Amino acid sequence: MIKRTILLSAIFLALLLAGGCERQPDIQASGKVIKLAIIGPFSGEDRAKGEDGLRGVRTAMSLSPMLQNGDKLELVIKDDKNMPSSTVSAINEAANEDQVSAVILMSTSASALKIRPVADELQLPVLAMLATHPDVTEDNNFVSQLCFDNITQGTVAALFVRDELLIDKVAVFINRDSQNSSDLAAEFIRKYQSVSGRVVDTVLVKPDVDYKAKLNDLRSKGTELLYMPVKAKDLFTIVQTARDIGWQPDIMGSDGLLATVISRHEEDKELLEGIYAIDFFTEKDTSIKTISFVDKISSSYKDLYKEKPTSYTALGLESYMIIQAAMNRCNDGSDRECINDMLRKTDDFDGLSGKVSINKNGKASRPLVINTIKNGHTKYVVKVY
Image 1 (cartoon, rainbow, N blue to C red):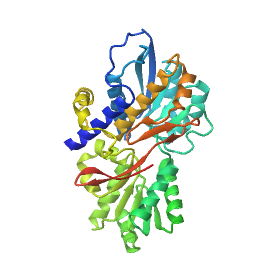
Image 2 (image 1 turned 45 degrees about the horizontal axis):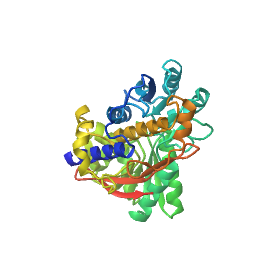
Image 3 (image 1 turned 90 degrees about the vertical axis):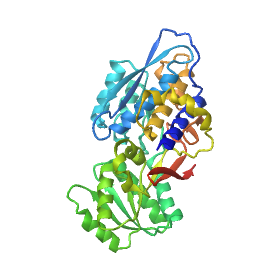
Image 4 (image 1 turned 90 degrees about the horizontal axis):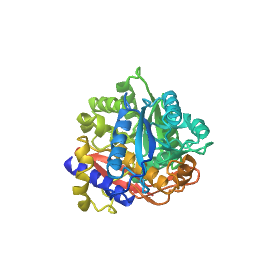
């Protein structure tokens, strides 16, 4: 676990250096303050997304607190509990009362979809750190994505299961109250069936499901893998039930799963031994010169926090660096329209596991990684460009 923390820390520092932000030399302060809103879940069951992401932002900010012209960045934190209605209230308050110049959104797709018309009306640039729904950037000009979308993720997961694991029969579990879960499941099923894979059953995750009976039924039908784009707590319940009946099928999870496990379910991690999951980065990226960066990052992230960094932390750091880089390319770093324009001209930014670009429509292009848990540690399996 110490090795993992060191490697992640090195990744964070590599990003800072790639973005031109090794601890800033003395810059003459201009006296101007530019406000950056961080909207996300800082309470409730999804708080790992916000809390871990904010640690990444603050790590980057500790090394690079100002723009190149001396303008100081100041964070405005809003807790939306990952509830779309609260996200709308938060962005309106941040824009009109706090007068922020840009937003990093750490909530998921439902919130990002909800604020599209609001961001356009306010002409406020929003970088959606985690939202993966393909329509997040549709019918609006001010919400951009940092992540790959669900079409890409579902397709890669299906092809990996079919072509790499050589799995013939799968069952798919879906959180019925999550649009993200439903969309990922639909995309996985579409692609998996297109390459002659068989979906034995789809299972809606809900309180009254008899998982013991359902899992026994799936086993009797020759199911080899469970595709589970579901909440971590539901996944643990289902996996524990499978273990109780002596069944250990392969399991494939979705983005953010391993980060949530590391941040909030460390004590239960052994249950997920061997699980595969989509992720945003890999510790084995040879483009990152880890050894030379460890000492420097010790004075930033490690001194600020005791918690282990996760992919949410790293994406928070990356979000800050991309927003700051966009501001630096504007004559006025607080100009919302210019920030949005520069954000959508992000080209080959040195990101977590490779280059990140954001096109004129707000769509991100970046590598996708599949990791697994082996002997209690996250291990890299494959990277897809």
